[in-house]
Length: 589
Image (cartoon, one colour):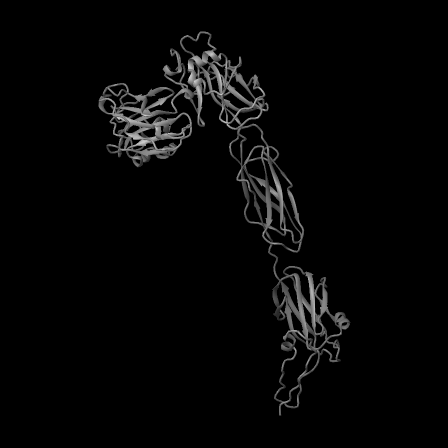
């Protein structure tokens, strides 16, 4: 008959059936009924980090690794530990369960991607006198090291000069060993000139995953445009970086800006000084205006430095400030209504410019804005304002044209009304263009410009006075929406057609309106209305424009300062686009 040799190990109440499943295994003898299975000490199961394992196992987690040996019999702890050997003799602790048969070896940290062998030679380690007859070896390999990935983040979308931001450094996982790196700084900005960084080296203790550093930008008072700071990592120890981090640095915009400069001459103004002024605007509330100052760089001779410092007073965002030689004379020329738009008027002898001189605005003794060029005599330059003015409309400087005020008695009858005194919305251009591909109506449009912020455009309208037949009244009303100073508006019969002709220039218009009312043929006047009242007319509503100086058949007219520029009739006839036209539209050049 078959012989069964069954051995029961001691059990404790509540223990799992693991021991019974591993050690109380029913074993069957070989077919030879006289040969019994050995009852000697042996390892019947190995677990690595809680999972059944066999010799040769790989990718074992080295951090807090646990190897459990389950023996067939309880072991004598001292004898077992004396016989046990492990490759490299790593730091370890050994614990036993209540039966003495479950031996757990804990390693705080093994090497990554390393081979280990747990060896127990044959010998008598059993509490029951059943020696181990065969050597035991369990081979395993720890997993490869995968370095944590560094990432950078911040709440700031960008930085202005003089600002700072905290940049967060985060690792995507913790590791049981120390890691470190140094910041690598790039981009077109320069450390210590445009910004400083603190700290620049980082060491992560085991288990640590986050740190931070501060980028502080420097207000150098130099207009440099957008600069970039690219943050990377070098000298990486147990870390990796997949993507650099980039943040933009912008010039610090002062809270006060140059808005206009004048060297106006008019009939009745005899001393040559009455029309000299400098116009500024506060873009933010300013608690102490005395941090700002002005200087006039005469005749291209370079900066003269600070020549006037503002008083220590506060101003509000949006306030217009006028520095003038003779306030009463300029008020008379501008008119009371316009002059009242200046919240602060300072009578001062500084404005000495003759129209060919640059103007410098200082903040804390640093030049933050210049009109013109301090090192160039403005005579003949496009920024000259002799007998005229220069004005920043939105972000673009415009001029009235040299001597455009000469012969006038007020700004209202000058050929170049000072923009602050002009209507908030004005005519800028009229078109009846014909080109190869335009069709009959593709080039018909009216161009408007916004001189001051307008909360509701719907108080304005446009009408075309056909063939000198007098006014036709308002034919298109602008939409009920706000517009900002410097906005350009195009009312077109066929926006897509003229947009194709203009190319990228069409994107310079803040608002494009389609209207069939744009039916002018180039001999028709155009009227601009405000609150149902005509405030400006191009041409003459009661005159057919054919043969008149202002005719624009197959062409366009464009207002520079207060002066209309005309073109040769049908000047775009052979063109296919504004770019290859003999008369490219002035706004698009």
